[in-house]
Every structure is written in structure tokens, then in C-alpha cells.
Length: 343
Image 1 (cartoon, rainbow, N blue to C red):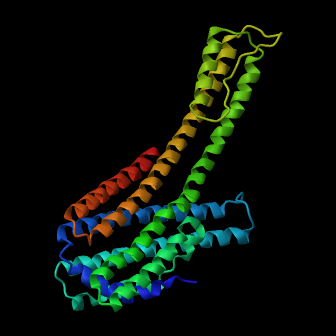
Image 2 (cartoon, rainbow, N blue to C red):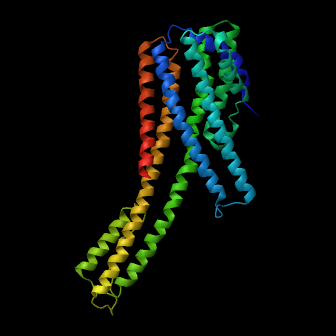
């Protein structure tokens, strides 16, 4: 069942008009907010698209658990959530466009098309595909419905100022739901990167076993001990739980290593180091992905605070909230670039 989103237009429409004419909303602050949201919109779109591509890849892999039917069902759920995220961004983007143009002096008649588009987005919006994946977002559905009721009551009593304030709640709830949905994106993107680490983890373990088997037949030398330390250091650099150093325990029949033996050991240790390096490259991507998703969530929260501050009578509150939003938008861009550089 859809939440009462379809009623929002009839409530928010008058609020948008009132908000645009509100003296507390300064054009400069409003422009800063909308420009930054446009930047967030673009970066969020890229994040959503990448998650959809990864989800398609997971569904196509033969080794993915589940029947073909269940995998397709999971993929369809992911795709539906992807479209819902885009719709949520689009609704907020259209809302921002309308209030910006009205605040700039445009008449409601000239903006009828934009307001109609905003209306259509609200009527068709359904958060269910997201809340099915992000269970923690479910409580915000109540905020959506409650916000609708409060705004409706304010308008009935002709309390437009109160209606403006109450109108923030449904839109803010959409931002909250998107922020909570970051966990669903993490469930797609992070495990896929970790899966790509598995071959290098297996290679390091296999090479280490071969190294142990070789050195067992050789007497200890400074060269061998130095090579073992290099191999152990490579393994430690992978930060794996329970990883132990490679210890040299020569057998009773161990012989002195020949140059050929040492060359073979150098080759094995070099392969261990190269596999560890590839593993760490992917680990850097994992950590960069965590940072990006956390920054994305923080940026949406900052967007919500800036949005709420637009109707504040306190200029300092508007400025602080908008500056924080600008800062978080830059942090999101930085995190996106860091992920790209980690690849």
C-alpha cells in the first residue's frame, strides 16, 4: 500500500507558493541550496547507476546462490529501488526549481508546467521498493503521513506560515529515507569488491603452502630468513584475522640451499608480494566505498538541515546550515574522486 504521498501536491502546492514569497528565504541562500542539491543529484545518480550495474552482474553470475527465478526476483527488486531513488531525487529537484523561480519573481501562471510536473512526481511516488530493502527507513513512512495531516490542518485553518513549516516534514522524510537507504547500497557494492579479493587471498595461501614445503627441506640461512620475513610482511599487510608468520622448521634431512633453490624461493616470495599488492588495491577500494557511502548519507542529512533552515527567521541558521551543506557536497565529490583513484 502506498503512503499518502498522492495527497502531498494539494498540500505542498500552496506551501511552495507561500514559501517563495516568504521574506525569510533570501535568494542567495536559496540559490546556494539548490545549486548544491543539483551537484548532489548528479553524484547520487552515478552512485545509483553503479549499484544497478553491479546488481545485474551479481544476478548474471552462475555461482550466485539461488534459482534463476529467485535471482531475477532479487534483481527486479534492486531495479525498482533504483528507480525509486531517482524518483525521490527528481521530486526534490522539481520542488527546488519551483521555489527558486517563484522566489526570483516568476508568477505561478508562468510556472504551471513545472508545478504540474512536481504534482505528477508526487502522485506516482511510492517508497515501498526502498523500504523493503532498507527496513530502518520504515519509521519515516509515519513521518510522511503525519506531515501530510499536519499541513492539511494548517491550511484548513489558513495558517500558511505553519503550513510552510509542516511541509518540510514530508520532503525531509524523503531525504531521511534516502539516507537510511545507504545501507542497501552498501549491501550491493561492498560485498562485490570483497568477492574480487578472494582469488588473491587464495593465491597468497597457496603460495605460502608451497613456500613452507620448499623451505622445510632446506637448512636455515640469512637469505632464507630474509625471504620469509618479506613473505610474512606481505601477508601482514593484508590485515587478515588470525594470520601467522611463516616459520622455518627444517626437517632432519634438510640440505644446504643451492643458488637454484634460492632463486625458486625468491620467485615464490615475489608472487606472494604481488598477490598481496593486488589484494590491498581492492581493499583500498573497499575502504573508499565505505567512506563514499557514509559521506553520501551525511550529505543528505546536511541537505535536510539546509532545506529546513530555508524557512527560518534566523539568518545565521540559514547561513550555517547552507555552508554545512556546501562543505558536505564538496566532501561527497572528494570521496567520489578518491574511489575512482583507488581503482
